[in-house]
Length: 265
Image (cartoon, rainbow, N blue to C red; front, top):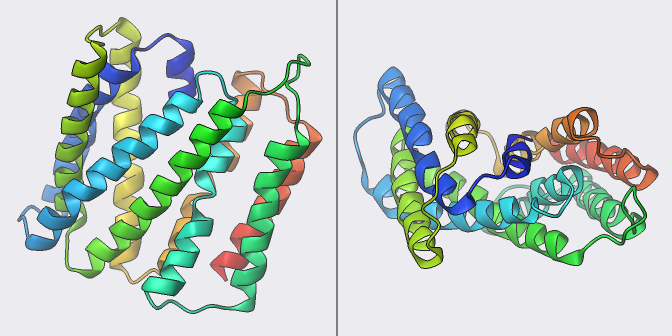
C-alpha cells in the first residue's frame, strides 16, 4: 500500500530502492543483536547474495507495475506467489502433497483469473493495460523462488538477521547499478518520507517469516499465511486510493481466502 502511495507522490524509484536498504539493514541488525544472531556463516554468505538479486528483481518489477496498475489487482497477483512456493516445497523440499493442497492451488488460480480476466475495464471505462499485470506476474515468479530460497537457507543453518544483512548488501549493489545506468540520482522529499516506512516494514515482515521457518514451519504453510497481506492492501486501496471493489475483485478475494485456508491445512 505504501509503495503505491509513494509512486503516486512522485518518488524516483531507482534512487529510492538504492537507499531503502538503509532502514532495512538497520532493522535487521537491531533484531540480530536482540536475538544473538550476528555471526556470519557459510549458509548466509552463500544464499544471501543470490536472494538479494532475486528480491531486487521481484520488487523492482512489482513496484514498476504499480505506476499504471491498480494496487489491489497487482498486489493480489504478486502475493499469490504461494502457488509456486507450494509446488516447489512439495517437489524439492519434500513437503507433503494433500487433497487440500490440490484444491487450494486450484482456487488460487481461479482467484487470479477472476481479477485479471473478468475485470476487463477500469472504473472509468478505459481498458486495463496488460503491461502492469505482466510485470506483476514476473514479480510473482521471482518472489516465489525467493521465498523458497529463504526456507532452504534457514534449513542450511543461516540465522535470520545475518541472512537479511547479506541479502540487503546484494540488493544495494543491484540498485546502484540500475541507478547508474538510468542516471536517476534525484532524491525528492517523498523518497525520504516513504523510504523509512517501507524499508522498516519490509524488514519486519521478512524477519517474522524467517522466524516461522526457524520454528519448523513448512514453506507451503507459512508463505500462504504471509500472503494474506494482500487482503489488507486491497481494503486500504479501496478506502484511501479510491480503487473500486468490483465483483471480479470481490470474487477473487473470496477464492483467495478459501485457497489460503485450504493450503494452510
